[in-house]
Image 1 (tube, rainbow, N blue to C red):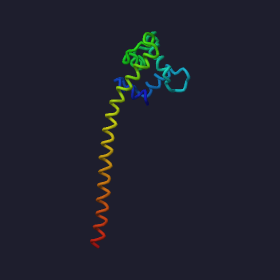
Image 2: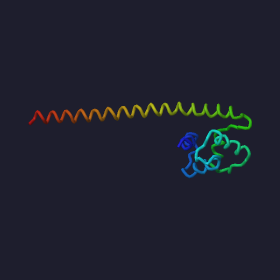
Image 3: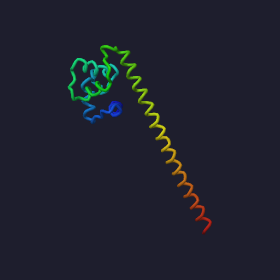
Length: 127
C-alpha cells in the first residue's frame, strides 16, 4: 500500500499487478515486501540497465533522480527522507481537511440526535 501511495504521489500510478511485479523484481528475501536495501536495489539495477524501460521500477528510478553508486546509501537515505518529509507536509494538509470533515459530520449527527430527543419530548407533552 505504501508503494502504491508513493507511486501515485510521484505521478506514476501503478496497477495492483504492476506493484506486485515491481516488488517481485527486487524482493531478495522473498517476503513480498520492500526493505530499504531492496528499495535501493531498484536504483542500482536502473543504473546498470537491468530494468525494462517500460517497467514501474524504471519509472520510479527516473522519478527519483538519484544515483546510489554516486551518492552512496547515506545520500540516498537523506534524499528519500527529504521526499517523505515533503509528502508528509501535503499529507498533514489532507489530514486537517479530513479532520474538519469528520468534525462537521459529527456535529450533524449530534444535531440530528438533539432533534430526535426534542421530538420525543414534544410528543410526550402533546399526549
